[in-house]
Image (cartoon, rainbow, N blue to C red):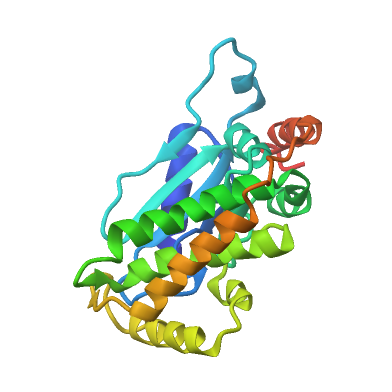
Length: 256
């Protein structure tokens, strides 16, 4: 599959005349709870030649291939990616932490890891992850039957929100590290059981609602809302991001 992914990425570079700076896995395979039939969620950041950015018009800032049952491949222009770092868009903060790197050109991944914490706003991060949890819980976990994977779509972000609320830092991408936020043995037993089932069940596997986990989600949602209600968004200066942008676009295509 990696060979197929690399072939698709090479085609994107060729067809769009861009240089892919890095490409990573962003879905359940990187989070640490893939099912046997989980697709591959490949995400990348790319750069055009420098002259592309010297225009009075804003260009397209994303490239996406048609999604099929196996591959979901899409990426952002370097300008969008860095702008989103400045806005604490949690997606890009996860991309640069992915444990699965398909390709890497230039030192951008390392530099994002170094600069990301300077721009990370706990208020914005909590807002993102809490919203994900509420959407998954309210929209998918209150029926007579639920999709097993939806529990992870609620549990991973609530643990990320707890990480931010308690530590004030960028939360890790991987579920195993986020579980440091929960030391209740009963909850961890339930989570271990979900992981055991998900490792062998397909993506459409139905599961009876888990009353303990549902109550846990409600309690943690309320806890975070209460404990972080006075947080304000962090204000930052974009100078370092602009410098990284210029450095990246001037070196991406010649490899210096």
